[in-house]
Image (cartoon, rainbow, N blue to C red; front, side):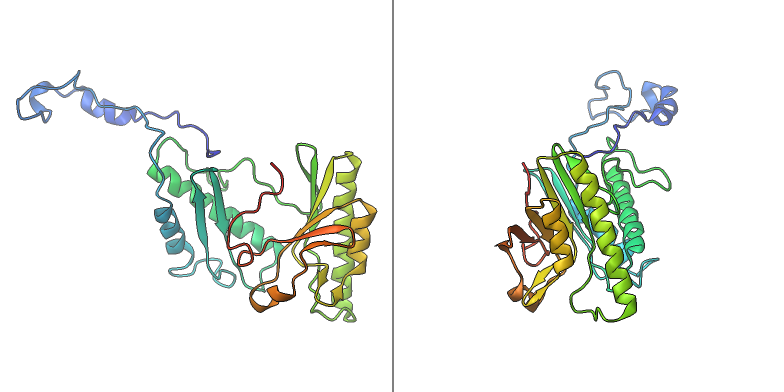
Length: 266
């Protein structure tokens, strides 16, 4: 079920245009009789099924054909809707030069475009207001913590293992990521949750690589499950999954899970 507000607007303009019509100037059936009261049907049908292929086509036209404001960042995009669960998955692969700030703006823009496309197909849903994305239940995990019932959702980006940590710039960013992660974990732990789930982009464990500082923070705040991405293609063969060092590691890269959402909590 979508989160867009229910339409309250009735097409009164159309009704006004037709209200002065007489029976003689309204197109009638072959037998010449008007069915019902001759008034236009202004009832909105909320059961019109959304054509998600059309939504995807609208997005491709706006962001891929040709490239728009996000030309330097967009690689591909897709939307997948599951009729059984009502879950809409939006896939937005971006280039390496995409900063977190750009990613947030791009994602919000795409979500707004999805809202407009859906509202065009079914008037039961309202299009987003200007400068709004039309969604009221989407937030971004950034120096904060969210909760799903009694489960704390914490995390940060982390830092890529392939970078040279001796480089002063990399070291500075890495230390900042540690501060962000601990700030998020502290907020989660302060609420005494049943569980803390940690979300990272870069894996703290990969092949022979081990990021002891991040793993130490996970242990410090009692994290038992860590969800991460970043790995694709041939690198998947070296991914760490399952339980190691007292933590269950879950890789959720799109090509690893075949683009099927993973349920972490029912």
